[in-house]
Image (cartoon, rainbow, N blue to C red; front, side):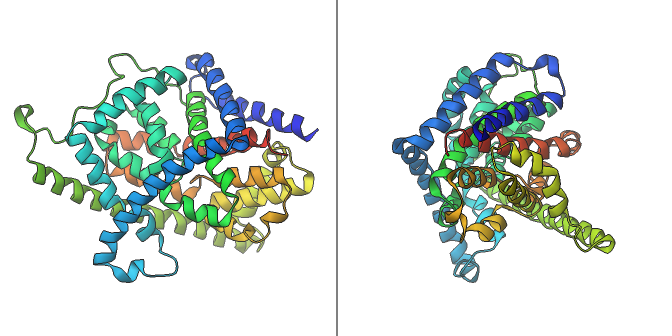
Length: 401
C-alpha cells in the first residue's frame, strides 16, 4: 500500500507543477517524460550500485578540495575565523567565493569555460530538451552551489532575457554546495546524501520546465562571449581583469550576507508576532501542518508523516543543518524508507534564507529591471524548491523499503 501511495505522490507532485504553470501550452511533455524516466533510472542506479555513488563522491571531493584551498587564503587573513570548532556561515559558505569566482573568470578569460559549456551543454540539452546554458548551469549547481554558480555565470545572466533568469533563480533553490557535503555525511546516511544531489538537479529542470516554460529560439540559445573584452574587441589586461573580478566577488559577498541576515530576522519577527496570539504558533508549526499531506504522499505511516511534516517545516523556516542536528542521534532507529525520504528531502538549500541569498546575488549581477522580475517570483522560487525536494524524496523512496 505504501509503495502505491509513494508512486501516487510522484504523480501528484508533477500535477502541482502543471497546476501552477505560468504557461501550460508551452510545456514540452516529451522532454518531461524523458527526464522523469531518467531520474527513475538514476534513483535506482544510485541506491543499488556502489559505482554510481563513487562517481558522485569523487566529483564532490574534487570541488571540496577547491574550497579547502580557498580556506588557506581565508586563514592567512582571518585565522581566528578558521581555527574554530565550527566555522560560521560567512566563513564556510561565502568567503570561498573570493577564490571560486576569480578562478572561473580566469577559465572564461582563457576560453576554457566557454568550450566546456558549449559541449557539455549540447550533450545535456540533447538529453533533456533544455537550452544549452540551463543544462550546464544545472551541473554547475550540483557541485558549486547556487550563489557560486550564479556568480561564475554573471556574464550569461546579464545577456539572457528576464524569464530565463527566473528559471535559473528557481533552479537555484534546489542544490547544495560541495564544500559542505562532508558535513552532511557526518550527520546523515551518506549514500542518500550523494543520491539526492544529481537527482535534485534533474528534478530542478523538470519542475522549472513545468512552472516556468520558456521558449528559447536558436538565436537565443547561445553562450556569452568571453569576459574581459575591452573596446574594439580587445581583451582587458589580465591583472586589471583579475582585480575587477576579485572586487566583484567581494561586493557579491556583502550583498548576499546582508540579504540573508534580513530574511532570517524577518522570519524571526513573524514568529514573535504570531506567538503573541498563541505561544504555539510559529512558521515552523504552521508549515508542518500544511506539509502533512505531502509527507503522507511519500509513502509514510500516519505517525511518521506527522514527524516528517514537522521536519519539513523546520527545514523550510531555518535550514537543513537544524534538522540534521535534531535527528543525527536517532535516525539509525528509523525504518529504511523514512530514513531515505527524510535524508533526500533535507539535502537542498530550499528555505526562506536561500531566497535572500539568491535575490541578493541577482541584485549584484543583473540590472534593476531583471531583478524586479525575479523579486516578483519569490513564491514560485519557494514552490520550485519544495517540489524538487518532494519529487527527489519520492523518486528515491520508490526503491528503498
